[in-house]
Image 1: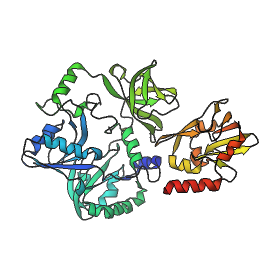
Image 2: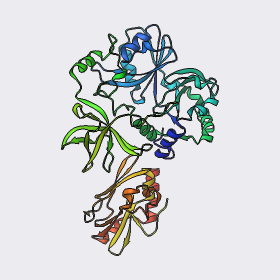
Image 3: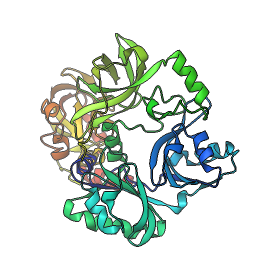
Image 4: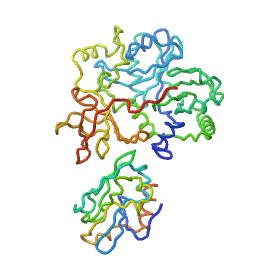
Amino acid sequence: MPIEYSGIVGEHLAVRNRVGLFDVSHMGEIEIDGPGSLALVRQVACNDAGRLQPGQIQYSALLTEQGTFVDDILVHRLEENRFLLCVNAGNTGRDYHHICRQNRFGARVADVSDQYVQLAVQGPEAEPVLQPLVDLDLAEIGYYRFRPGHIQGVPGLIARTGYTGEDGFEIYFPPTAAEAVWQALSRSGQSREMLPAGLGARNTLRLEAKMALYGHEIDENTTPWEAGLGWMVRMDRPDFTGRAALAAQLEMGVEKKLVGFEMRGPGIGRDGYDVLRSGQKIGWVTSGSPAPFLKKNIGLAYVNEGEAFPGNRLDIQVRKRLVPAEVVKTPFYRRRRR
Amino acid sequence: MRLPEDCRYSKQHEWIRVDGDGGTVGITDHAQKELGDVVFVELPEIGQAFAADEVLANVESVKAVSEVYAPVAGEVVAVNSALGSSPELVNQDPYEEAWFVRVKLVDSSELDNLLTADQYRKYVEEESTG
């Protein structure tokens, strides 16, 4: 996947206003099946896969015993006893071993990444672009739902998910059909001025929508409480990996918290830059960029817990200058629902 | 790749157009294409002096931030404030409208260390195939 095809700004705006096509085949897929599969998924993933019906999808995370992120994942319940986990490319091997080590339930775990190509059709016009290629009615697939179906005659999965903050689909199918499906989608999207979009636009789109990126907002040093992802942790369950540490942190309180900020002076707070207040370092930027749709310079940062409130005025060290910024409510961008 | 014959070029992708004991500095067409959509340009102050290869300015695109180096030693006598409100000029017209600074040269013999348009074209071609 290239950084850009025709330019990040144009690709970003195509997705917000019309539709864009991403090749996200680098994502990893792990399949878990057998009678112990639900027990294993509930052990390793902090959300509750038991609440999923076949055909439903859940955002979740694999955690360490310390309650920090091994990875953030999408759990698809394929059948009663069969799950497909979509994981971050760079983490696939580590995730696989992390899951296998905890498999005392007799489930079968397989890294099936090389059996799938993944394309993402994203934007308000994604549905009419994808519809002619598939043998089911896309209008019947709700948000965070999927259906098995045929894409250009090839069996695959069609999921209404994405990483852009827009409506759209992520489709999974065998690599042999990759070229044909990409071409067919390109033709189908032509009348709607669909653009192929790269990693650059994927990053700015997810940032506007405040979706976490592994290695930036979340990693083995951050917990869901700190990252503002506590909503996906089901503490009402008696046990899952990381639960004890998360319970303790809930009791103690967090020291740092993820916030969104907007630059209030000329400059862009980039990843890794220091965040200061009255000359004291109080945090660091995890992701920062010009936001092509919002036309502001935005970012996410970890700051001391006491500084994490909207309206708080901070400074960001941009090279030799301190540039003012303000903590704002997130997400920066929220689409209008249909 | 546009490369005016009346400029000299650095291997860090700056151009300088010399006029008497002064010169106008900017970044090349090749550099702006590599950067993508430019959204912010941070310029030096008038009166600041730079040695050759010192960081003169910073250019931010959506993708990344890049440093712009002084192609030769000099003192800044003017900065292009139009880039503050219209950074996209860097993408649209890198050799004219989007000049960065005018400098007073310290030692015009330093210009001999820079590339001609032909040499720079070859350099970029080698760099991209290399």
